[in-house]
Length: 476
Image 1 (tube, rainbow, N blue to C red):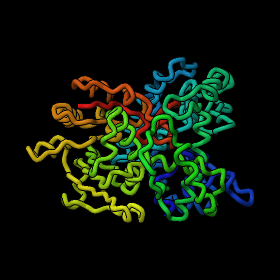
Image 2: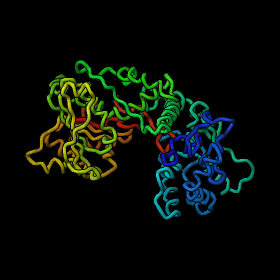
Image 3: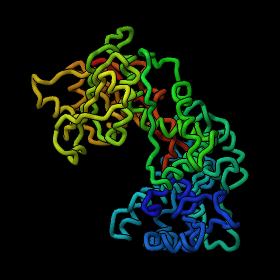
Image 4: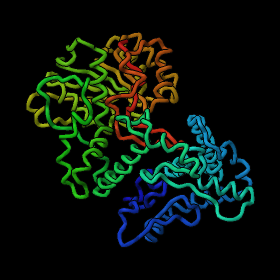
């Protein structure tokens, strides 16, 4: 079961066993993590785990080894990354991404197939110096290309988070303040890269506890209903949801100090309904009639929300006067969902008692096509939302048509993105279509985006999170 999971970031960085995902601190009997002797990119806690993973690892292991030791490969790939401190980290990240893309292409050609997600992640999360982008493998390749003999200096990790690396004392001195003390724009609560990565280490350990219990990804939403609508403005994840998570501290393997990690894990799924409420609150301003509607209708132009369907009941829990929540989900990916029938979703005992209900309906096409096909039967929703759309990168033309439809029919809408760079690009596309963006709805950090931050691959800085940024909201 464990071997079939996609390894966590710690496993790609050699901080955890690549098969069972245990970190050094979790090993017993003086056992130590040891690197694979051939590729030196993955580590194992024991010969048992190494042997158990070999069938899956061996092909890519040999490909990595051949890539590093092939003179022709070195001549093609050793470029752009000098060993000097880069003052512009955005430029450095671009160079790293270009090199990683070239390496992935070469390995894919050598293997005569597309690389798997774990294989791409081994390239993407390779330990690299935050100041110059050099990795241990690149340092070895340069040394081999120049026929250097003797010991080869390697990167060393930050002692606090162990997820940021330096190739020299000089580079450490140049970047340590930024790493430890500068707030990261894609993080939360003003935390630095070092602090966010310490949280990530804890988040991964908590995720492993639930995975070992075969409980899947942790999801939670409180089964309580507020007495009346309470605006989200001025509240936080901590003030609204921490207290309700104390019941989970009794789970074997978890302690009370794990509540912040459970809150971060919960925010992944809860960010969907909370973002909807935040958008409705700001697009409607002082008009609170939407909080008292018999039926609240939300159209969702995406598909991943199916994974978190149960948490949408939080909308009913925070809007006690609303009797029915109607969600219509559209997207080409929904072709795997049977039919367009209305699906009655389960609700908690209190919602059942008070006659509150919710339904889902799925349409497997782009939103503008779904809406246009309805013709005069199309009814404007209270909100249309596209979560983590990536509209500036993927299927730009269909998204342009969808935005145009939303604007022409004056549909209140909001778009979210994974990070700041993506949000800025998405906002340009939305504004170019003629939308006047609401100042509190983007491009701006989403106060109700997930606070479960994940490390960006192929970069030495940067994080992303589910609905982490609001790309843009408009009234239509």
